[in-house]
Length: 397
Image: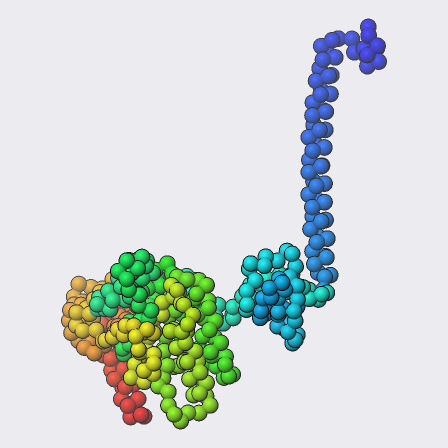
């Protein structure tokens, strides 16, 4: 009997081998546990280092915002500090000098005022909210009676964005802007929504009244930032709805409020046809009152094309009825052609209201199908209400 067998009381060699296997397995388990503990230790150390860096950044003095006004030959820059004075400061080695330019926003250290960081350009939250992140669910097939207008706006807006090289080969500059005008409810805004849906360009929607601000210079600043955002996000489309709110004809005699609107208009004219290239930025304007727009807006180079969006004719009204009734449940007696004849002078918005009102008539009587008499009641209600409103408005004017 060996010393090992005497010490552990093992006489059988098979039992000895089994004991060795168990010990070897125990060693493997302990080794795996050691690796896991080391990995956890490294993770905790990294968390400690991260917390220390965060603590150092929180305890560090704040940086001073400034704007670069000049670049000197020796590598230093002249900055206009947010605290007031203009300073000549060095640039930290960690800042790429080739990215510094006049007008750039930078951060200065409070100790030595060296440029330590290049800040991103600011975007007004009000302007940022104008960007349409989700394209409207409106296709060209949802617009009835405006085939010539759809064809023209596709050629003027979509084609230059998608086939820009074709214009280079022909040797002409693509149109810069399109103005849509016509009575209310005829599909001007709907056309712009369809363009936003069909194209992959960034779509920025602006209402003209949003650019009318009470503080001097605020409207012009918003216009500058809108076009700066459009250039950064190019290819992009800027849609200005209710353009007559800021684009009215300028008069010699004006109040202080009107003069501020004129300043906003002049900034818009400068952005549309100024020295700064717009690149792949297209403009679509919409108005109900083209007669009061300033002539400077309508000249070629700003709005190259002026497209009329008129009231739909009988064929157009029939197509619009088909679009708004394709999801409705109605009886076979409903005659779309007759409805189109009975709604002479109605706009697309009126026809949509008629279809909605016809559906409400059926719902009031707890019916699941719309009948012809429902449409006749709706036509009488919607069109008579519109005529009464028009009479009251004309009397008031």
